[in-house]
Length: 286
Image (tube, rainbow, N blue to C red; front, side, top):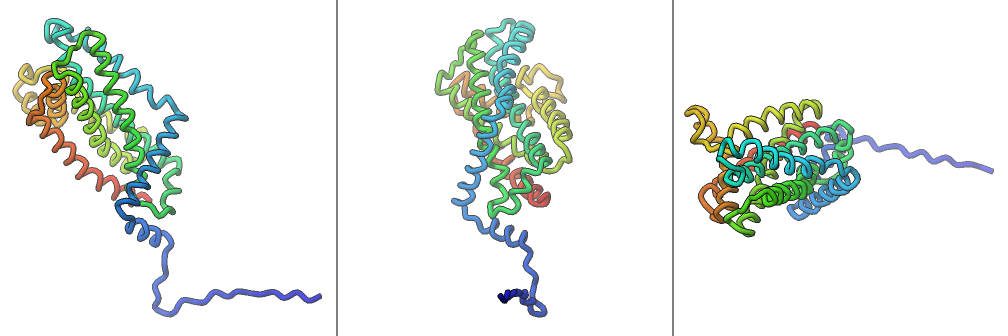
């Protein structure tokens, strides 16, 4: 019985031919993703993030507990000192808590992104012919649910302790929608930080240093006119102040004012600046 062994010899590349890098081929395939393909890929990543939330319900602890705790605590502690009564302080407080909650919740986006990158989850994505923005934008779309839950709970808590918005249902719906948009746009800042920092702990530390000045050095909890002149000047240019003022106009008066327009423009500007930075930093890490 005779056994025949066949040996396949690779054909050498011609002299001067460029060697094809598989990772570069994937990058070229990714760059050619159409807008529709990018959207489908982003939704797939959003679905992955939603399944992760279902398996880890503790991710909702901040959006469930913080609105209840902060709204009740700030109202009864500062209401009498700032506005004379809790009921008079609630129209000032509730929009401020909405902005603070959105900023706090979106801060977790960068921390979770860095944790996934440290675990090697994103190493699997680099071999896939998908748009580079999909692994970043997908979880952020899923986080819209967290922003919505936190915002609705804040308004409901305010209603339970005496808040009566003059804008009615439509005004409150507009305020919640603007809060969700602001949270989603600000999350791009923390996503960029997540791709730049070396650990989840460093992302959290840097994010806290950003969140506290933006939140408490704004008109979220006190009128800007009561502050010293130099601090009032900073508060007036603080982007969070514009979001808070816009939400107050919508919830308390049901009016679409110039502040609403400036808030939307500011959110678009943040996305236009930090979304490309986050994608570029993420691509370099890959």
